[in-house]
Amino acid sequence: MRLVILATLVALALGGCGSDKANTTAAKSSAPTPATGTATAATPTHRQFVADLNRLCRPLIAASDKIKSRAGDAPTTRQLTTGLRSTLRLQRQMIGGMTKLDAPPEDRRALRGLIAVQRKMQTLQESALTALDSGADTSGIGDATDRLRAKREGIVETIGARACRS
Image (cartoon, rainbow, N blue to C red):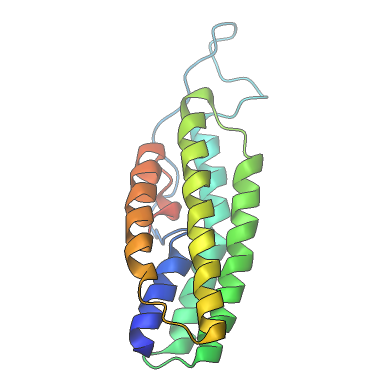
């Protein structure tokens, strides 16, 4: 049962982002502005936006990897709750950073969708923490996590933010 709980919580922790050891900048570039033919200083290029988004995801990945390696195959409830609290803090920071990002016009809708999904993932993480603190079953959280992850994966694939994939 602890392994099921760990798998659920690791999935939640990694729900924010994923690891990508390869190049994390997209090959796309933003569309030129009508006046100058290039992106303006006020509006980032698609490539700049993706780099900023990837930068926001990396701390959560590092923390999640560290938590998984420390917990092993038989984590204690304390290890689970400590790890989840840590990833929740990083999740909040990541969402806060995403809300401050300036996206090029072609990426704004996708960014809004990504933020909405991340907030739902955060709510699931908070529910899992509450369940762990009270001794309740967390196994039902996995299905909701899987649905949100699939939705998020589609968004980050469209954007090209490789470090935000799980």
